[in-house]
Structure formats: C-alpha cells, structure tokens
Image 1 (cartoon, rainbow, N blue to C red):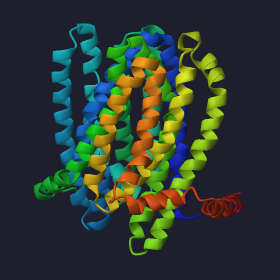
Image 2 (image 1 turned 120 degrees about the horizontal axis):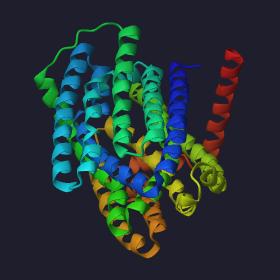
Image 3 (image 1 turned 180 degrees about the vertical axis):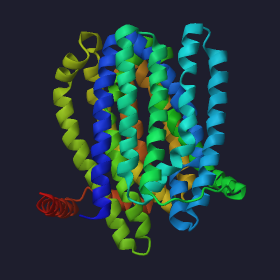
Amino acid sequence: MTNATKNSFWYLCFNLSRLLVLFIGSMWISRKLGPEAFGQFSYFLSVIIYISAIDSLCHESIVKQYVTHNADTGLVLGTAATLNAILALASTLFILVFGYFTIPESIYLVVFFLFIPGQFSKPLNPIANFFDIRLLSKYSSFALFVGAIVSILFRAISILYSTDLAYQSLGYSLQTIVYAGTLYWFYKQHLEAVRWKVSFELLLEMAKRSFPLFISALLFLSLSQSDIFMIRHMIDIRAVGIYSIVVKLSEPWVIVSSALCTSFFPLIFNSSDNKKKQAKYFIRANQLSIYFVVALGITLSLAINLIISILLGEQYSEVSGVFRIYIWSILFFFFANIQHIWEVFHRKYSVSLVKTACACFLKIALNFVFGSIFGLKGFAISSLLTLCFYGLGFNFISKTTKPYLQLQLSAFKIGESKKNLRFLIRRSRRWLKKEF
C-alpha cells in the first residue's frame, strides 16, 4: 500500500468520522431549534463563511507549493502564519462592521460577534498544509475530528438548557480553537523542529500569487452562499433553515472530494516530469468521483424520506424534494475541485477567475428565474445547472482548458473505467491481504 493511499485512507476515515459526528449533532440541534431559529443561525454562518474568503490571500495550494519547492520550511511556515494572522485581524474587523451596520437586534448582534474567537486559530493553518505535503494528513484530519467532537458536545449539551443561539455560535468558534491547539500538539510531536522565520518579501509574494485565487474564492462563495441570502429575501428565514438542511445532507460528498484532492495533489505535483502518468492521475480522480457520486446519490435519494422522518421530523418534510435535485450537483463540484489542481499546477489562475465569475452571474440569474417560479426547488435546479457549467460546461467554450477537457471526457470512457476499476480492486485486495 503506497504512502499516498494510506494517507487518503486515514484522511477519509477521520473526516468521515468527523462528518458523522457533526451530521448527527447538527441534525439533532436543528430539530430542537426548528426551521426558523436554525435558519437565522445558518444565515449568520453564511455571512461568516463569505467573510472567510479573505483567507484565500494565503491560499493553501500556494503554501503547499512553497513547502514543496523551498528548502527553508521554517521560513515558509512562519511567513504563512504571519500572513494568516493579518488576515484574521481583517476578518474580525469585517465582522464588527457588518454586525453594527446590518443587525439592529442586540440579541442577534451578540450571537454574530461570538463567531470572532474562531478567527484567531488561523495562523496555525500552514501546519495542516505541511502535513498534507508530507502525506501525513491523518494528523490534520484527526485534529479536525477532535475539534468537531468538542464543539458538537458543547452545542448539544447547551441546547438542553437553552435554545439561545449565542451558545451555538460560541460552540462553532470552539471547534476551530480546539482544532488549532490539537494540530499544533501533533506538529510538536511528529514533525522535526524547525525555526519559524518571517520574510515580508515572501509574504507579499504569497499574497500576490494568492490574489487571483482570493478573487476566485470571493466569487465562488458568492456562488455558493448566494442561495442563502436570496432565499432569505425572496422567501423567508424559515426557508433558509429548510435549504440549509439540504446543504448539510450533501456534506459527505464534500469530504470525499476533499480526500480525493488531498491524496492526488502531491502525486500530480511530483509527477510533473511524466505527463502521461500525471494525465492518468487526473483521469483516475475524475472516475473515482463518478463512482462515489452515483453510488451515494442513488442510496441517499431512495432513503431521504426515512432519514428526514427519523432525524428531523415533520417540520422539515419539505427537505426531501429539494434534496433529490440538489444532490446531483455535487458530481460537478467534484470535477471542479479536481480541475482546480490542474489550474494551480499550470498557473491558470485567470482561467479559474473567469470561470467562477461566469458561474456566479449565471447562478444569480438562474436563482431569480427558477426561485421565483419553483420556490426552494428552483434554487436546487439553479445549483445543479450552475455547477454543471462550473465543473464541466465551461471547458467546452474555453480554449485554455480544452486539454483538460480531454482528460475529463476520458473518465467517461467505458474502457478506461473498466481498467481503473480493475486496478482499484487489485490494490484493495493486496492491501486487505497485507493488513489482515
């Protein structure tokens, strides 16, 4: 079993465990809060996520490149940590300004401001990038798991005594703080000690190289979070709660996608001298995406009514119909994530920017059209069509991404699929025989 496969296996195990804990806890919390209160919390959380786009000025893919190609690891980590600290202060300022000018109710203002403590764990994010490059993602993913356990226990216990949303936002901040502390402990225990240094020249270079990705992230978050903002104003806050549950039910796909990208990232970058081998990795990653999405999509679509009745009750009965449409958009989210590695490798940042901008404007337009006609289902249809364009359709009209389009289309060839499926089965048997 290769180091990359082991890394992917443990990454997936810990992240799926974390997701399971967060999923069950979040479902129970949303059931206790009800669609309206949960919708209010989800709206505040969407604002925080949108503000977090500023973190992309120290983009993880750029940091990973510097760690891979720079002999002075301490200089890269120290500089990236300093840049993240500056960005955390900027995020805090944005939260304060947004809260004072847009949230008149003092009770909700407290809820919103309690997201601030979580911003100050960001300087330790480069450690996770360092673990990923060393194929030690099990430590960063386990740290996330510990943070999730502590957070969800705090939020679940607090809701037994009070449905005040302040405890929920504080619990959310607690997750990132515990994660950062655990991550740093693993770093001290399992990696060689390096002296962190700061180069302001390198800091500006990192920010400059990350800037197109920051604009892209800003547009992408406009793309992903526009649903919540538009539903709140076009329908109501209760509908925000319903749609947020649909998104949460789709989160397992995001974790699988992250695991795939994390495991293939070093393989693709390290095979830069062998284009044929690199192309094979891209094709295999896209094929794995198709296998996961089809298998899980069919299963969850059939079981969604039972899941809703057990976990959430009748108050969330509208979720089922919306979910069955929304879930298939995740396939194209997989494709987009894998393509992002290709764009970073070839430094096609402007392509990523143009693609995201087009998808953002398309999503807002489709939200207005389909949301007005079909309500919440219309927003799900809009997400499906937009992500189809974002993950695949754009490559048909862009000359720059035509080479990558050929790799994507190869993933749909039956011959390639059979060959890679046999490869996966062979590797799995070999690993099972070795381990057990």
